[in-house]
Length: 379
Image (cartoon, rainbow, N blue to C red):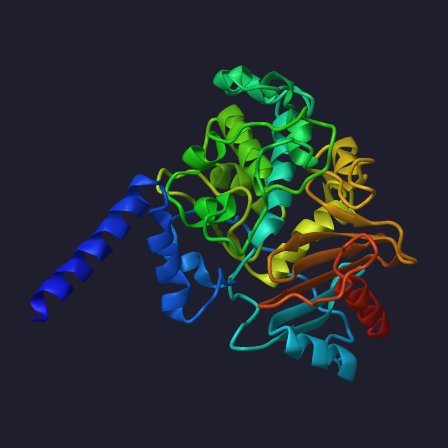
């Protein structure tokens, strides 16, 4: 009696699976395995080990020196409460080039790798700057179709520049959504071919006319830089950033199944090394006084565009409306590298949840909170 209903049920399941594969949503199986079957509802800061990756190799390390008052002051009750509620795993505070505070939770240590998420967008833009310095790319206004000629056949495709991609003014038909499993973000994160996701997208308007934060824009930028330098971007990042910055640990850059780096996200590294990227920006492209990236290019990164209403430059979020001017790298779930030039200060916060408060321009309110709390800990 039960055999026939069971067969019908199994056929229905097989039909659903077949439909998912035919429709191009086969990445959903990986997504379910890496989220719901692990007791999670979305991507996590420690899921990088489940994806293929390329190593960003370090050279000779130079650890951050500790300040004389390293960890001598206690965090305020308000900061402790916020860090606990947001399930933070690290909080690091550097001033005048020295570690003043360094705290870890939930088993994390100074060398524990964590997912960078969208802070990798800043790395991709920095590599664009290096490719220009190296003569591999003419300038930020070079057309994307110079690297991928077929893209010119798309409507508005011949108008798209590398600057448009770096400033989030690409005009892509891409809706940024981190919760919808059928969104392009999910397809890029859990999928098997980044090219199949981003190159099938069209442009819905003339590039350069509107700011719209889109992970697909940075992924296209990564494709262009990768083709220009003629090597995996992880290798280029090793030679041009990780080794000159004398990072403490190797990093891992997640790739799709074809070996293309996910330039919109997904570098796995530690809080100390993330802080060195902030230091590079703070010193306008210099490392120990020696130019690493053209200062003019770094200034462009830190200058908010008019179309963004003053909140985004090239791969960097900005807040020059605040009493204390600052800019920051930002990743999903509240990953931050915050730079405060006025106080020669860098703050790194990594964790599992982002605070809910927003300012009048929809920027995360906790960034200013971290700055104010860090100032309480200064000498």
